[in-house]
Length: 110
Image (tube, rainbow, N blue to C red; front, top):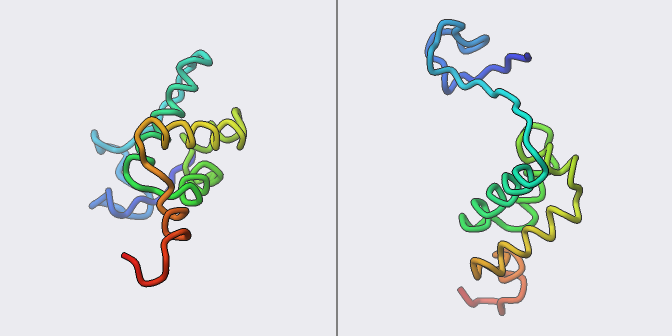
């Protein structure tokens, strides 16, 4: 396990964390079937779509290895799956891509 510094969470030692901290964030990998894996991906996508993230910003989250949960979905399911699910979530929640809307808005319109 790699320890990354999380100074905003650790008041004791910002460089290494406190090994005795009972509320330290710890990720534990678990095995899931394909259906549960896909549902996890859809839930992540839905959360950010509903929060107003653009497609570009959301895809960057999945491409980045610094966000392990979303990145493993990107690696396993691929770009096409992620973009298809983003489009499906946008239709389901009636949340168009805010960046696309801004690009089609006439100049001076709010």
